[in-house]
Each structure stands twice: as structure tokens, then as C-alpha cells.
Image (cartoon, rainbow, N blue to C red; front, top):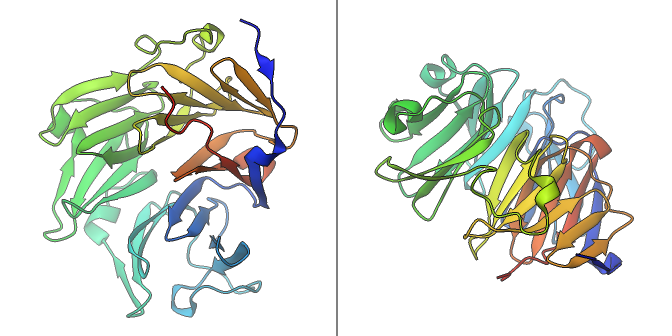
Length: 308
């Protein structure tokens, strides 16, 4: 099929320069960025003209100026929230979780949990169950940690699955989605810990994008889901893109370097300079993309909303 070319720079709403971002989280009109090789994290206040603040010392709070003292957030790969004042910071390099209450100025370390972590890459707060879901990438495990009784359970035991490199685990509409980079698939389970489905290259309908199949999910690292049930999966393998797959497992689009493919259209975007997308956030009508190797975060219009 011949694609129509539709060049539209209005799709790109903002380009934010940020070095080597590996984790990207959205909360309450603010974007939180983590760089594994820094000793601080950043946030972008979207409603305040994209003002950037940094956090190096928890007790000092967020600052808009450069900080010279050594920070205490080295190696943070993922940030999660209970609310705006209560945050979890997950350090991949220091193999630990830090909790901080900015209102009470109180820090908490979970020593029992931190002792078993080998190299965690992502943390997700399941507020319905008051659990943390910690993907321990280097430890080949996903832990379910209850914040009330401090119990630790292995999802591998609950699901009877052997993980290899679980990079991200999320929960959406009472279903667990475990993205395992080495298994090259997303495992889907219900709240009763029954395996109910998975996403892999053999069960996705590629339609006219069959050329993406051979390297599909070669190195997946991030999955997000929009309000219509579409999956957004970032793959830093040879396809080097974001796949958009609908709830019927049909590949409906691709976001890649300098272009977006949607059905029979190509949106040619010369300023969409993407290379190694390690994370993204889907927020209402926007997609925020962390292009790690081009030191940029892109805010683009979501052209896939309500796509059949």
C-alpha cells in the first residue's frame, strides 16, 4: 500500500532537552524525569511554562537553580506516587527503594525489601490493594510489596511463571501487565493471578506493517495503556520505535524516528528525532516520549485516540 505523506509539525507540541532520561512519570500536571547516571531527579511543571526543577537532597526539596553538593538520588530509574507529597524513588544502581514524605519531611527505607533487590528498573503503586509492584530486572523477579503489613510476595510464584528480565509491571483495570525484555513479550494476568493472555509477535495482527514483525519486541522496555485500551510499547531493539496496538491486538500505528505511521498515513516530522525510547507517558490527548539517546523529551499530539 502506498502511504500518503502528511507533514504536520503541529503534532509536536514541545521539545524538552534532558540528558539520558530512562524513566518518565506524569502526575498532577507535572512530568518527572529520572536519569540513572545522575545523583538527582527533575520535574517539569507543565502549567508553569515548562519550568524545570531538580531534587538532589530530599530534605531541601525541589530547586530551580543548579545544585553543587553531592545528591542522594543516584541511579534512580523510576518514580512513583502515593500523592503529590509522598513519593517513591527506585534506584537501579543502588538497588533500593526510598520513600519520602515532603509534607512531613520524613524519609523511610524498606530494609527487608532492599536487601533482596538485585537491580530494579520500575515501580508501580497499586492503590486499590496498597501494594507496590517492583520489577527487579537484574533479579529476574517481580515483587508485590504490601505497604500495610510489609509482606513480600513473588509474582513468579503467584503466576507460576519464570521471569528472565522483567523491565516494567503495571496494573490497569484489574489486570497485571508484566513486560519481560528477554522473554520478548507482555504477560497478562487477572487479580486472581490467573494467566489470561499475552502479547507477542505471533499473536499480533500486523496488517500492512508486516516488515516490523521479524524484529517485533526485540528489546521492549515500556508499556502504557490509554483510556480506549490501546497499548503503547516502547522497543529499543532494531525497530527502535513505539508500537501502538489496539485491544484486539491489531498493530494500528508506529512512532519512530522522524515519522508516525497510522493506518494508511505517514506523518513526516523532521524534528521528531528519536533514538532509544526507554519510557513514555500517555496523558489525555498527549504522548510524552523520552528519547534517551537524543537527550530529549517530546510532547506530541496523540493521533491514535479512539482509533478502530
